[in-house]
Amino acid sequence: HVLLIGSITDESLSLMKIAGLTTLVAGIVLIKSGTRKARKPELEVNHGAV
Image (cartoon, rainbow, N blue to C red):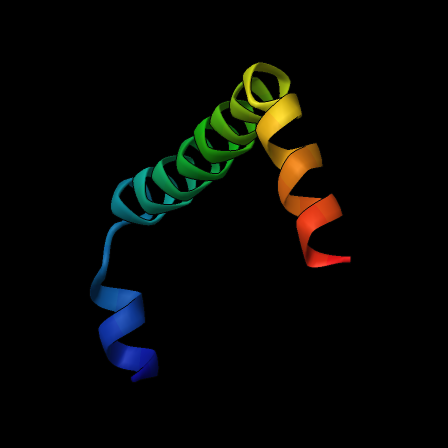
């Protein structure tokens, strides 16, 4: 495994890290924007659960 990782270029690793970070950031932004737009439905669901 170490040899395989070593054979992979640093560029590909950085791209993977960047892709992962961008995906996480995009997900967080979507979740925040979604919660802001759907606050009422979420509150209703929470009250229903309780």
